[in-house]
Amino acid sequence: MTVFGRVHMPSLDGATAWLNSEPLDPEGLRGKVVLADFWTLTCINWLRTEPYVRAWSQAYRDDGLVVIGVHTPEFSFEHDIDLVRQAIQDRAIDYPVAQDNDYAVWDAFANNYWPALYLIDREGIIRDQHFGEGRYEQSERVIQRLLGVERELVSVEGVGVEAEADWDHLRTPETYLGSGRGERSASAEDLHLNQWALTGEWTIGRENVALDRAGGSIAYRFHARDAHLVLSGGAREPIPFRVLLDGEAPGASHGVDVDEDGNGVLRDGRLYQLVRQPDAVRDRTLEISFLEPGAEAYVFTFG
Image 1 (cartoon, rainbow, N blue to C red):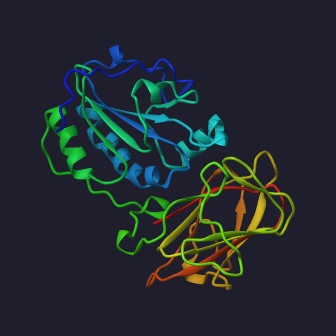
Image 2: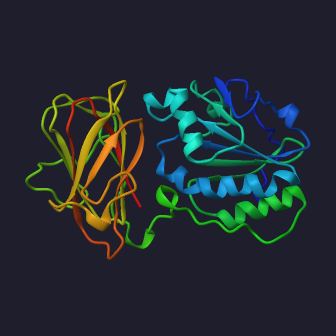
Image 3: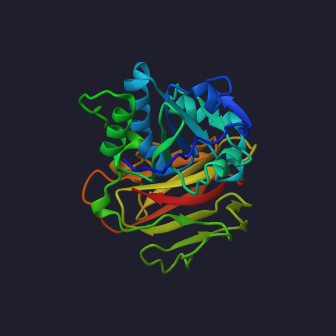
């Protein structure tokens, strides 16, 4: 367990809304062990940690653990509280969630990461922190120690987009598409590993690329079991899309948001799983085409 001196849990007053709860504050939480979990709904790293946080909340609630999700949006469309409500429903989150649209809680904790876990003892002192995925056993042992309980650790296995990455075969990094952090773009006719390309009429924005005319596509040459893309359609009607792998329908390698023929529909702003390969992982070329204009693409992530 990491010791930080007597650093008290910061205020939660800057939250712009609360879901699943009335507003909470450090004073009212005294006597409880608190796990503060910073997340944003499109983050694949958070999605893969959420099964553990959810399980801990359920397993240790009666022992005095209070889990608080702090949703601090990475992209502008994630400020929409209805999308956060939908994410809470999709992930079966029943613990309190603070909507942190102004980054006030994020700044109060001096946080810099999604996901980030902060463990606070019954006196309101931060006793442990962890950034990113992994270290689940150690985090749960800290929870038990702060609660004064000792028992078998919970059994967790994520499914769908929550499944642990295939780290041994993951050779393609997270890739942003907007001008603010975009890199590794290339020609669609000559894609090398970890390069991507646009075809059609697109507008390059700071945080995304937006399709101006139907029929545009994005291609990516990648090496990973899973391929995801964060998409938003703004306020438009649902936008059908088609995914090809090496020029063909994905078949058994389709992700949870695509059928075997490669068909999918962009409805809400979120992370879409386009590919999950069930067999040997190798270099593949993914192409996603949109049948209507208005699709906004933000970042590819892999697992």
